[in-house]
Length: 588
Image (spheres, rainbow, N blue to C red):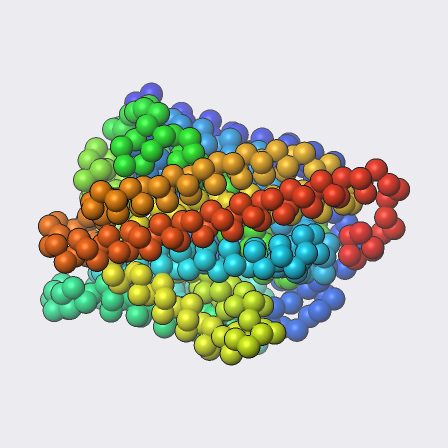
């Protein structure tokens, strides 16, 4: 196999079968959605969290809310084992696990009055389960925020055409929101206007690039500067109503990001004609130095694209509150997840055609690979500069749109955790948002984010396992088949706990040996530098902190797994009893 043509084609066929046949069969057998049943968006319409949205707009919102950097950077890490195992996990994981979780999370929420997983876990596992889950989510969101804030700042720094283009996309989203919800304009007209403004934003970014002298003058402060700019955007996303900021921005961001995925896949499919070939090994080995064994590391390295716990939070806390009718849940939940699988597939195709991917790093390799695949049919060498800006902006939009929701969810969960105690001031939206940004910002600008990234995959996939448990409990309580989600829940629980345990051990071992785990990836603060003794000691302290973070994640995850297992077993006898009357067990 000399080009990515065949593996991309086979994966596309697999996704088509998953949605068109397995997905619809599962839908008829398990969830049986009813278009006449009233959804929470109509029950509790408030224009802020609950409001019915066209399934086309909501599909774009869902895709852009779940598709982030996990499926972009994950395949690069997985290449340490070879591109073949990465490909198998991207396709098989999504086929049997990923979309079932996203779709199931939406259905569980709308069948429980639009409630998120916090109150649902309280009903299923009691007060202890709710507190454990919310504690786990808070730590998990901090880890996500620290990594994404740093990466967004890094992208703005190394791709000078992207800051102006990103600003243009954000303004386009705000304008689209005003036209759509205040002026009540037709969605088709708003979309056309948005596409014109998006093109102008990209052109402006290509011509109005940040001068190299500006970045040079900032020196070591360039990353902190762009990180603070990022936090200002995230602050607005957290405190403003969804229809005025996040929702329309995510909708318009869908177009440049999804088109980028399609263009890369087209480039892979025509690669036999453009003579673009694979430069990476299909199989490297079952153990990668610095990472560990293929199990469990591979299954958490690709943190999204196959399955992601973040998707369950979006589905249950946001999308379910905007669903117009129940039958929209399948194309939105399952369709968006399988589409995110295309992003992971496109990323893998981009990486395998780069000869020196290891030396370029994940970010540089992705853009170089994307330009290599698309340049032959998009203008040739003369278009390379514009394409670099375009794919760089796509990377930023993948990150910043999802991170806006992460910050908002942090605020909502903080309010839920502290709402009734003596610390309820920390649930106030401005204070909660500030705390949710300052702590990750501190991690990001100290360079420690890269170490935290190692935990991101494990925590994210463990969240997915817990979501599958909650979905299974709901199904067994309503006498619906639950094995299709229970088996993946068990597999992901064991795998992710093992992965987090591995990472915690690595950090502890580094502290004991006096040899800190630090990142020297190109563009990061420690790139090309030899650590002084003082810096080494500081890095060891951070390694110790990360060991504690890992133990906390492992303990919370293990306790939550035990609680949901008990709840599932308690629910089984009820499934033998006569079916509950409609509207009682389902909460409708």
